[in-house]
Image (cartoon, rainbow, N blue to C red; front, top):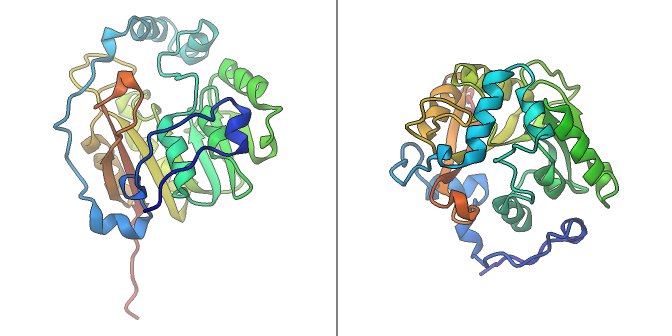
Length: 269
């Protein structure tokens, strides 16, 4: 049975070479053609939801956003009020990289923050674009990552996800703490942009942070159904929904991994 090895030279260069839980490949997100037969999509939000408001830094973030909605994200990075920032690569990203289950080609990470996940996914087979609206975050990411061995395999772009126009489309979009950070009124527009930015055979991976009973945000209430409600109408189907068993401690039991593909219309002519 295939098991995971340690991370490669690029991750070691970041000081990220550490032991991850050794899991059979079958416990990871397998290739698309295997997922359909193995996993059921939809619902599944019966596990516990975490209350972000219990974190004082989330309360600080919400105060910043209330006082300065236009430049709030940039201000939060300037003041170090970034409760979503792990200060390291997201563990499941390391698993996806190690297992070889990420598509090759061009990858987009919207709301990339300080860029740990961007760097971890970048390789000779994958060019990764980290997109971020906060100039302070982009500055931190560039300062931290510009001298890494794989620096020519990723880039950071300061732009608004909803208006940015790249020259090429993407084979994969990876969304984590971005969907739940935007106002729910923008979620349909988010789905439209995902469709516009992905190649027809491209894939969307969402690391879903389950949140409920919040009267305000960010982060806002978030369920699997919330993704389906906006993705299904623009032509996406759920390929798999799986519990994220290696979420960081404070998000244990509150995360799911979703994989989505655009509907394929077959011609019978």
